[in-house]
Length: 454
Image 1 (cartoon, rainbow, N blue to C red):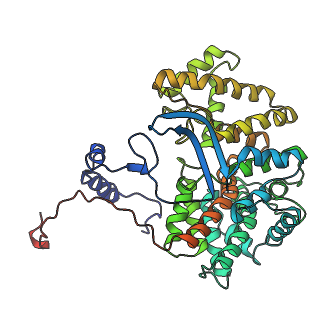
Image 2: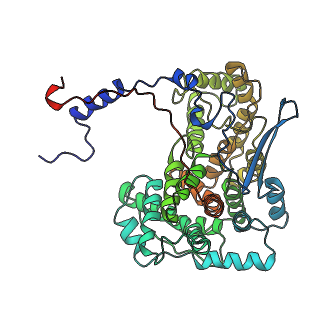
Image 3: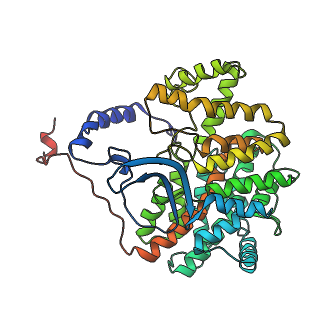
C-alpha cells in the first residue's frame, strides 16, 4: 500500500525520539562558550554583522560614559525620519508607497517628474507571463498564501531570459518587476484558496494602470473592485510603514545572507518570504486580532478592571493560547514607543469612524494604556514597553475588511521594497559570502564497523 505523503509513521516517531535524546546542547552551554544565540548579547543588544545606509532604528541614547537612556523610537529611511516622510505625502493628499520605494532603492527623494516616471515604470511591470496564474496558482491551489507566494516567485525565474545576471541594472529590473507583481500574486493566491478550499466563487481582476499599489490591492481583492479614498490612503500608509526596518530583522538579514552567496534575485526573495512566514516574524498581527476576539468573548470589554485581569491572565498563560504573551506589545529594539505604531494609531481613528469600528478602536486604546502597566508589574520590566506596529496593523486590516490569510502576505508586499534595497546594497558593497562561525561541542570519537555496532 502506498504510504500517505503526510503520514508520520511509528518509525519516524522513534527516529525523532532518538534525535531528541542525542541532542546534548543545553541552554547554559551558550553562556559557557560566550555564544550570542539569536545574534543578541546578554543585554539584548544586537550583534553587529554589517553596515547599511538603507535605514536606521533608534530607541536609546548612549553617552560617552556608556550610560544608556531610553528614548521614543525613531525610524529613518535613508536618513529621513519616517514621520517626516509620512507627513510629507499626507500633507499634500497623495499616496506615498511608490515614493518610499524610490527613496529606499535610490537613496534620494524623487522630484515630480522622477516620481511620475517611476510610478509608470512600476505600472508597466504590473503583469504576469501568459498562463502563469492558471498554471502556477489555480492549478496548484494551496492553503497558505506565503508558500504560494514563495513558489510563484521561484517559478518566475523560468520566465526570465537572464535570471542569473547579478549586475546592478539586471537585479534592479528584477526587483522592480517583483515589487510590481507581488500584490497580484498575493491576491490571486488568496482567491485560489477561497475557490478551491472554501468553495467560494472565483473572480480574477486585472490591475488598473492608473491605480497606485494600494488602490490596486483593494481593486484586485474585492469582487466589485470598489473602495473609498480613505481606505486606499490608509492601506498605502500601512505599506509605507512596513516597507523597511533595518538590516537586522530576520527576513532582511536572510536577504543579505542569501544574496552574499551570489545567487539569483528570485532565490533571495523567496528565502526572505520563507523567513517572514514564521510566526515569530511576520504573523504577529494575526495573533493580535485573535487575542482581541477571545477577549471580547471572555469578558465585559467596557469594564477596565476586567480588561486588566484578562491581560494578567494572558501573561500567566491562563487565557487565549496560553503562550504567556500579550501580543502586539514589546519589541526587540523599541522600548518607550514604536513610531510606526504611533502613526497608525493616529490614522486608525478616522478609519474607525468611517467603518463603524469606534467601540473596537476604543478597546484597543484602553488595552494600549493598561497593558504596559500590567507587563511592568508582572515581568518587572523597567526600561519601558509599548504597543508595536503589529498591535494596530491587525485592527487596520480588519477595518479594511482584509482577510486574515492576507495579513502576512501584505507585509511581504510592502517589505519587498526594503529587501530589494538591501539585496542591491549587499551586491554593491560586500564581495564576500556571509559565513558565521559555530562552535562544535561534540568530541571526536572512533568509527565503529557495522558488524560491531550494538
